[in-house]
Image 1 (spheres, one colour):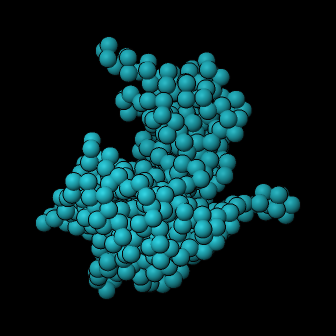
Image 2 (image 1 turned 180 degrees about the horizontal axis):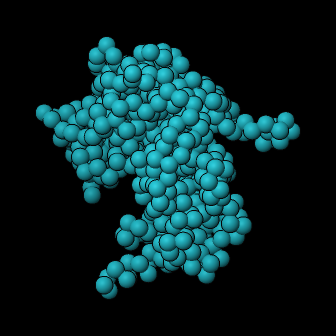
Image 3 (image 1 turned 135 degrees about the vertical axis):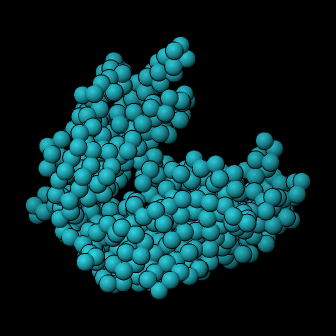
Length: 168
Length: 303
């Protein structure tokens, strides 16, 4: 019989940080809580829980999204990358190095969201002006207000990556 | 949208969590229609969820069932036929920015999409969702009215079409009937001599507009021939300013003096005082935006 009423528990099958994930999740649980509380992946931070601060940014199918404005049930059939997976795979290494060199992480609360949004930008492989970087990161708040250092770091990585691409 | 964290700590309750609800992911559009019919007002469709989930987290609403239409192929895609551009309801804001079809034929939508939230919001939020939500300060309702769009609404009973101008009924109110979904939006291709203009004033980049203007203007040489100006954030819905549109027609560009349409702005727009923003300020902003948008068209024509 065709289901017309839905369920409070939902079975999902997804890819998380490159590995298959099969779980039963609460319909009402957003992705950030699912990652942090059920999977203990606490690198994804949770700030405002209504889409303003950007701390909870993760990638779904390669695009940045707010995990507080996404239900865990909605990731079924999709591929999710968090700060843990991207760090371990080394894909964030140049951004992380640039953040450390420029002291772009102060208290660190916004850093995972900043890094994932920056990763989406640098992954386009295209050059970006300082104003474009600023615009791209405008949805991620840093309450230490270390914005200049963050933009410096992203700018350096884009310069290095586009230079590398020209040489190869 | 304020959240009192001290209240939450004092009473030891987590108020930033959604109430319990059921969830269902229909296999097809017909399945979605049957679910909506079966559950009546208890069911709410979710697509990108960028407004809905924020509202659920803050417990501004508590539907019993979320119907996830985000994967329905019938609601996706963009096409052009016989001078009509059809955008599926699931067209994401980010797609409006990137689609060649939209940028070429409906540049107003691409200009407006740049102002919607931030990149992560634009990666998920959808055209249909924005129209169905009908926030009076949202960009896309105003653009769809300015572009004389027609909404295709579907339900178990079949499809019907409603003009964007008639679709928005008031604050978060639309012509959608119980059991209905927005399937697609049809835009007539603008005539060759019309230009799109868009501007908004917000307290921060990405916030909802305090006041905004979506405009389609036709001009010959340095003179405005005709205009369709739609203001948002001023009153309870996207508002066509008929008198202002007439008043600016015939003006020479660049428009340096706003006296030619200030009276008409007061005639067409009757905003209320809201906390932190007086009606008088909104009217001033609307006047400034009108001049800015009209003059941006001169710049566009020159480049």
